Length: 313
Image (cartoon, rainbow, N blue to C red):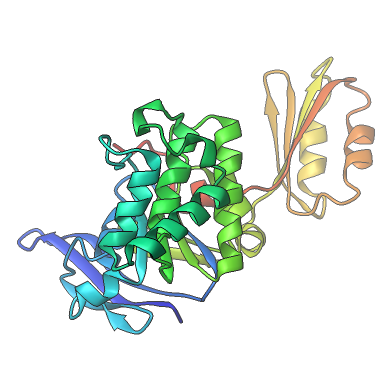
């Protein structure tokens, strides 16, 4: 395993025992894109801070490519790249210089640094912008530069903390493609995000954490199946005639886990939606169908089911 986290704990108040991270165990494989999800205050940022040597754990161990990040942080840093939540590009340097000096910092010769810089500019479609300052870039371009800089020294693991926060949809899709392309280089990616669609699209496996503990860990598809992410049928009806009886009948139907009356019709939750739509249409024909929308199972449904709907500060 490229990343191994065992019994990781971080307690900020020893008297009250406020644990930001409370016994996390995780393993990441080479070339894997791994999503770490959780509400605000769940422990995501603290976990990444420990993995990237910025914070010391209270107990437990993190190995990056077999290196203990606490016992040998300098060696561990050579194996990791970090893209933080905020733009940390050097504003006084051009894009080309940001990449070039990063390579020098990690021991490249001037010639090797120049070659690696040009390679990254081409890979991330930044060649035409190499002479501009970070302030002249769009949010999406700046994020691509940050990813390019983070992998310039060819790390084994890349940590992405909320990489698409504040990006427009086009920039977000370009960033997704850049991250997916890292698989070709064998780079392992640990991604934190509040965008469930992003985690679903990019991650081979996802861990959902809350209060410093892992609540669920598997592929997005298996999590949706295991935790009852359901297909939702929202039916707007012309009348409410006999709707209570219809809802009661539907609740007894195999594959339907719930049917509730709404102000403008009926909302049906189905564990198995295959072949169900014609039966629903037939069941409500006396009421008259005005409109229909179908919401497919999503990672967001799983996330809310495990962590709750309450707003976190």
